[in-house]
Amino acid sequence: MHYHPCMQARWLLTLAFAPIAVLHACSTEPSAGNGTGNGASGGSPTDGGGTMTDAKARPDGGTDPTSDGGPDVDAATAGELFAFVGGPGGKIRVYLVDAASGAWTFKKDSPAGTNPSFLAFDPARRRVVAVDEVDVNPTVRSFSFDPQTAALTERNTQPSGGAGPTHVSLDPTGAWVFVANYTAGSASVLPIDATGMLGAATDTKSSGAMSHWAGTDPSGAHVFVPALGANVVAQYTFDKGNGTLVANGTAALPASAGPRHLGFHPSEKWAYVVNETAISLTTFDYDKTTGKLTAKQTVSALPPAQSAAGVSGAEIYVHPSGKHVYASTRAYDSIAHFTVNAADGTLTRVANALTGADRPRSFGVDPAGTLLYAANQDAGQVVGFRIDAATGALTSLGKTVDVASPAFVGLARMP
Image (cartoon, rainbow, N blue to C red; front, top):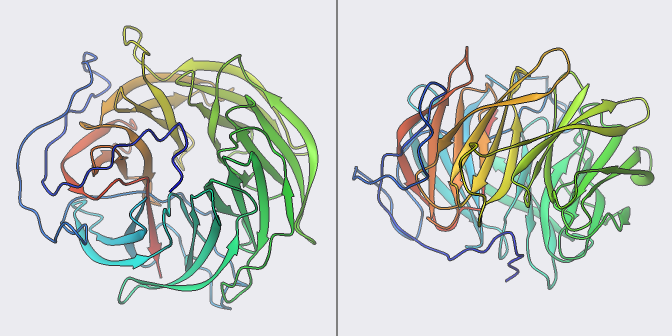
């Protein structure tokens, strides 16, 4: 099994609910710590069962009419809300989410190789794609999803194009899959057809040491790969006709930033990167004509008095309203909340909501932008928050659900 340095996990399996401490915008910044307490739980240690509150899915901005010939549906409201959790246990666990209460009900787990550490949903939300984060025979898997049974049925598997794949995404048409290969320092493009079958990689580029994320801008014309070790964001123009990447330079960051994941503002004027090493966020101006990013601001994801020793940045999410950005910090176990300046896209940190347990590697937001779930990987639990519609503040849902070593949590409504 492949464990790259940013994971540093000690895999735990527990099955208990615990309330969490949370910091609101009007609160005094506390030090990080774990919550305690008990609550009812369900399921078994082998199925990751139980009930709780919400998880993550990024809005897709539409559907893929080519995926099955069906009508367009609203990603925020159509279909049942499901949470998908992946990690080194070799299974993807699926939960039904009650959007009103945030409660999770375990439905089913499905085999997915050795370490399905990151998942992506096609725009029409008919299928799921997952990387298998290993160094030997690294792969990408495609699954169909049955919302009636919550079963994932594997369609096929293809090589990821390099060792240690850590991230996967689809373009806005749902016809192309992008993979970041961390150990190999590369990014690959694979076609995916209307039935969900993956084709062999059409292109692989050396995108930089420790490439950690690969995806397009909202228009799908350009591809970006934050390379943590190279300390750049590799930029490409994407040829949708043949699935190839044309080098378009690199976007520089402050020294030793360690860029990890990227998110675009819905206006497509700005983009944001969470920096793993510096525990910061960098704001970029974005020229969608040239596909170029230009860094303009870097701001810490930690409270001013908080020590950065042993802390690292992990995930980032731009709220669909464009008014807020969230980022996870590991070791100072929190979700940092930033507001967005509507005039220039710059960020102001408002507060850090504590996740109450160790190392929130991934977190996800429901398509409507009302619920956020953080995967505390080393603690083996997922914890939920409600997002205030007016202020963007995070309020604890007060419960957790325990899943062995959750590396990824994502929410999607599956019609």
